[in-house]
Image (tube, rainbow, N blue to C red; front, side):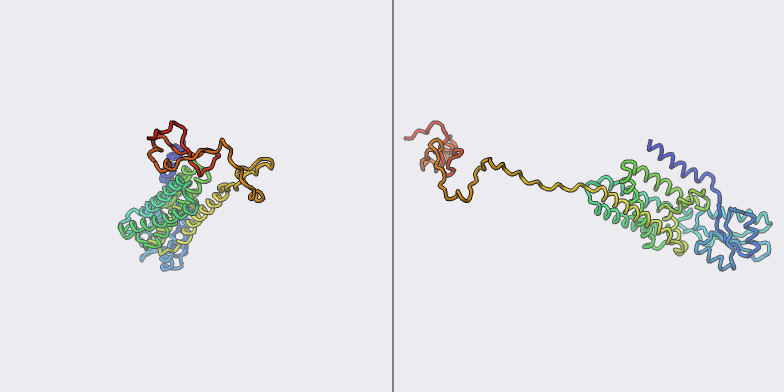
Length: 383
């Protein structure tokens, strides 16, 4: 049943969100008050028009990811120029280009399109950040599953240390492969590794916390939350401006969506809006760790029982082998005739072969342990 739920959610999220993406208030900077009003009236809620005072101000807004495109008048009266940022994703760029083209065609004006912030040459489809985020999320999820399996063998602080160390290592390795090795993500190495380490920690601690709260159902819940809903709404395959309202909200608060935005910010937009995604990742990781620590300490292992003193003997019961201080001066009782053992000849004590032959030496119970007697049996013949 759980498997059917997971596959249904996976197909519904990934296929359903790509089924009919619609632009919703895509931020566009427009120069000129008259042109801005005309564009807003013609395109309606599909775009969110930002009126720019000058072409340079609009260009700065595009470089800092405040808008995804700039629409301005061309050198001739009937010309329009559209400057896009392909680093925002192919789906978003294609959507705003289609809208601007439709407006220009309706207004009888010619449109020229240029890409001001293009994608890296080794990331032509703009999906490197998505797959990088997906892989790191999956690694944190798998680590948490392993830690759940050995939870009884490690103390809580050791589990936390293991997950934190693995998250840091995962970020360093993934950033090295995607950046310097493959050259698909042009972000600086250490900032990229830091973002990925936070993502791995958020995935690991969240999965571990859900497993602690829901038991065996925690892992399927983490699968639905992180790997299915989180990655499908991250905004990489389908831009967040094209997602339904609920999916846009999830994209802003889920770790995969925050990581994808942070990777794009530090790769192409000078980290202009990286603080909000970083805060989201920190809240997920630290919040899950705190909840996990509180729940674990609340359950607490039972304290060991205090050792119970041995019961005291009854006053009337005799204490064996105990001699009071007053009785130490009294003479010890002389053994009776039955307890008194016959002495062993001196020569028998020095012959170990006679012991093996049946002349075993024993000490009678209750007798003098300093004496040895022959084990009852036929006496050896002496010449």
